[in-house]
Length: 245
Ligand SMILES: Nc1ncnc2c1ncn2[C@@H]1O[C@H](COP(=O)(O)OP(=O)(O)OP(=O)(O)O)[C@@H](O)[C@H]1O
Ligand SMILES: [Mg+2]
Image (tube, rainbow, N blue to C red; front, side, top):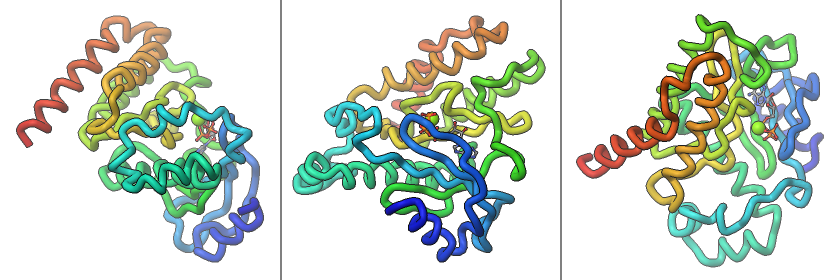
């Protein structure tokens, strides 16, 4: 689907009014700010359109399939199809992100509310002032200790609560966290991992924690905590809870 067709689809669905401005051209996607349609619950809508798969920094297929065979992809045919057809790969990528947003938003985790998706795009709640370029990424803001401490606590809880939903972000960092008036909002979830099935779940959880803790270390604290120890204690609780669920 080209951009016009995507916007037309969301208009017909009552999700957007008009596409207003191009917000960001990222590695893997472009993001537009749109006016809301009658079915959107926010003052603006973000439409994320994935680039053609061949232009993307495509991660190793084997890594991508880890933990998904037999769960997300039940048939051998679907897996072969992904190898053969980039559009199928793209659609699965978008599907993971859309399902993750739906699931996590329903459980009150700090992610944008999703409104709809197509094979190569998704529409969601726009984070930030509807008249401006969107909330800054955490990477771009310098916070005082008074601001950063509660944010650090929020993020630790969010990582824990995501894990309780069997979810590990897999690419969490200050680049994929928006700072919206004192609140952290986690975005960019196409590589989300199911903690029950991925062979590298704990190392991925550790890496997410290290990335987040590192940011807070540079804000003067966080070094009082050990990111890997934190990840391991979350993991232990998660495994025990699952065993005795
Ligand atoms: N719901 C949203 N509300 C406001 N801004 C958003 C939203 N979603 C994405 N953005 C903006 O678009 C940028 C790119 O989005 P995202 O990280 O999902 O895509 P990406 O292609 O992986 O980008 P990157 O390569 O920069 O990580 C974000 O850094 C953010 O600035
Ligand atoms: Mg990103």
